[in-house]
Image: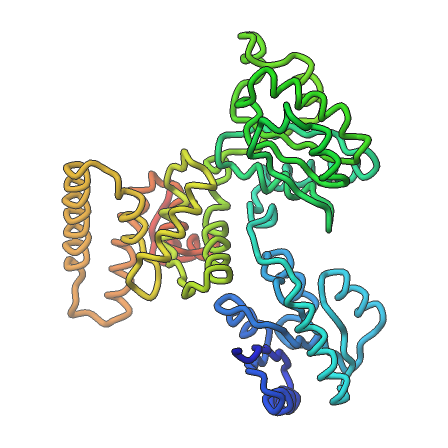
Length: 436
């Protein structure tokens, strides 16, 4: 069996090396990080079995890094906090965020080894990483969705109301339903709708205090709808939360006689619209990275980074299949890209792989023509002048070209150039480029 991997994060070299020597003598693989930035990079590319994390570091304190991992869905391993002058309040805060334990320096040898061994046993019981509502994004529309779900969850601690999630297929409704599942509570996604006819009460009995998720309620026939109505009316007795999702216009189906009136009324009492991916495209780069991280952790696939142009291309693409389509594209890119990083060409290849051959040929010719134009523009720079002046001339050509292509949209230009808006404005002013 492979030895367990431990990441030690401490800004004091003596402590780092001492912990490394002790743990290596016990048969562990040990990696060292002298600050939060190094630890952040290592965690992005690997999943250690345990992290020993110092609280007081110069660039970023351990509590902030712990919170960052927790909010980003990367706290999938036990983290043991370390401090030479810790307080009870600090230990409580670290535990609240998700730390496994707290060690005070100087750390006694037996205490260290016992805590590490206990953390490893705990690690084996942790659930596997998976997409969660945290990964869905940080845009205003997603934050509002999270806030409403939190309110529903809080109001339903005593008597959980049924919830109707409305949104296109693949939008992430299941992530919302999972968010309403209490820690340790059971979960059932209904795959055999006939159970609503043959045994709705048996479902509730087996799922007591849990969540029942029905992916597309509009697919139920009239008899199954009656069974669901019975189940919903009895769910309060079993403390079961019923969450239904639909991509259909249920009032329209009701008017056509295809949906039960009473069921629609009871489901509509608490309903939320889950946005399509195209409604929060600003979240796509972070979503793509999160999906890639999960593939790395769950499928033991080599980690692949995206370059900026690739992420911009994903964000600007159309996503009729929503989150489900994005997941499929990212998995494809990880498996089939040949370079060290996933590039713009890789994204174009996957997004257009089902295009008509003739269309793809035309696009290739257009890309070649565009590239030739760019080369010609570069060649117009006077190469006999000093490097700084030649570089300024090239940057003027570059920004003038892309400013025109972006229709004078500074936000798009910043994305293309991979610059912050404030840096971009300073650069354009320095080069003497005027914007409308």
